Image 1 (cartoon, helix red, strand yellow):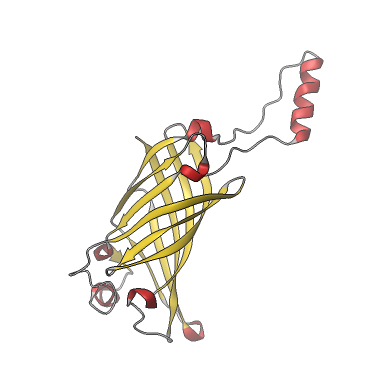
Image 2 (cartoon, rainbow, N blue to C red):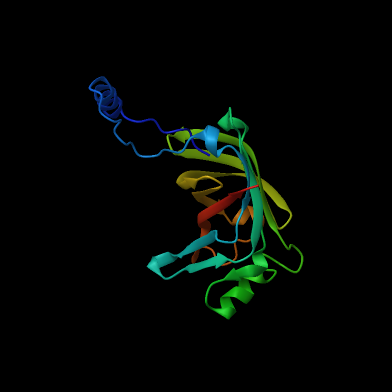
Length: 200
């Protein structure tokens, strides 16, 4: 979800000068091009869904990952605004390194995984914010509550058939009925996700 990157005016001038002198063209760094990257991608298991809930007073807080997720995204060839993302997270797969914490997060106090097995996100708008960045807005549904949330996206890597992004977002727990532990634990969950996609 990014616009193409263009070589600098200096690089273009050097290439033109080399052509005029009959020299071979200077090599320039490969840049992602939306026309090449456009298409449908499935999110692969090599992705990482990481989260942090800070603790008041600078304590360790809660840090973990989700091991099970699925989804896809589409990059529109002609208009980035028409791109889309669909993502499903399975909160029962949460891992923190402490079973006690994991059981608590799965309980009715937080995710209530026995009643709500998934957390979903469906984009409603994609907007480019820089040469390699975009803002994605959409509907997040957790514990039966749906709200509009926003995430920032940065291109990490692209090559034929595969692509990788870093996605960050700050989600307030209280609107979803998961504000247990506040104010000792922050009401905000910080997501830092490395998403890898394979072209379909």
